[in-house]
Image (cartoon, rainbow, N blue to C red; front, side):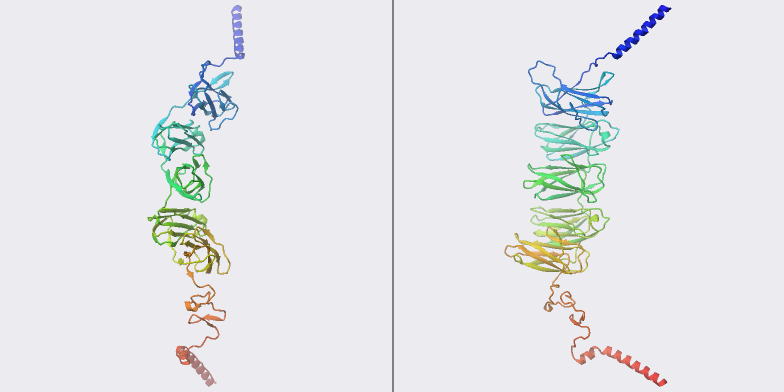
Length: 638
């Protein structure tokens, strides 16, 4: 019995010793075959790693060259970067550079990590080894490294300079990365693909030289932002059907997207485009493509529906705004550097808005100026849009919008254009009251169709005069009669002869004070003009021979106000009171001339006066007779 006990005791002790020895003796890492990937020269390859632990992470990227005696030079491959599930690039030693590289990351974020390598020079097969591991009790545990190959393909027809927005809704429960790959056959074609998250973080890949493939990866989109993810496909060169592969199935076309072809003809010109946003869950993404080498056009300003300029996050191929508020936005596109005219394509994820609510067909003569008015309330949040279309390519016109507080916008046609558009932001927030729209024929005549999102009415009080001549440095005076001051005083000039430069030099109000005038292309404007006669001086600044021009005003012109009472042209104290005004001891008589209040100038014979005043004399006699009778009666009573 004791022998059995002794044997059991010895066996137990031996077991304990073996356990202790095992626990303190290092164990070799398990046999592991790393993932072998391949990269082409000038191309990139992506490897994905599902990290589940927060223990120290080791990622190793190396060449897969087992033939040590080969005379072929080693492939030159670069580790471009290692990215965590939030898209943050690791910057520690060994996380970028020429491979062999070993990157160590402490406390890694669980999720899908991404390793990107690029083939600089490929002399062999371009194969690389990628492995990732962590330690547990000196055991080296390897993560699964893989190349995603679960893709759905769909073909799209692309023409040169075309742009296409596609979308996919991704929820926060989707933990996988979002990948989009495009392929085509034509080696000449050049394309670009961009992934835009709902919080407008982006990833872009552009083909170079003879590539026929672009690939863009965005890590763990679900944890980044839930909502509509966008894919922007741009054909930079060539026309080629493109197949797009994604790991989230088929993509939907963005229904509200718009593609516009236009051009900028002058270096200082800007184009404005209103964009109607109804689906606020889709980012407002804007993109430009120049069609001519050497041109650079930019999205210079973006205004929200309240008329406030807002930043647009640039991502190289364009810019984007997250969660755009509902309403009409305005985008300014201007030239940064152009050679001649600059044609371009402009794409947006939302509708471009061109209102046709109100249309007027207006005949207009050569160098004619017509003013319209529209009352806008402060609760009107839409901007004002005015569009002019005409048939004759020889006709050129200008549109100006003048707000109630005389903030102005102007647009002109040029060359053989037969259309001009003008947009003014958020009129309700700028000024309540009557706004002015000016239509001027710079050249030619014809019928112009004017469309606007506010009803326009021609101003009855407007007046226009054609002047045949003004000399160099000569000042010509115009008198404007401002009576009912419910619209701005707008003054316009149009030279009728090329080479002449005629300007509005001074404006004097009815009190004799010189007043500043807010200028626009062909004139200037004054808010809330004071009633009375205004003096406008026009100067011939640079004249070639005779200098015919047109002078126009929203208020009627008058010849009164020059300080001289000219009876021979019909001026008197009623028709021209500013020149023929009566003093404090006079009144405007029956013949519209001033007469003394105490003694009116006698006219005609005594008989004429008696005849003219017979009724008044009769009344006086009756009154006197009545008084006399009353006195007589009272006297008799005493």
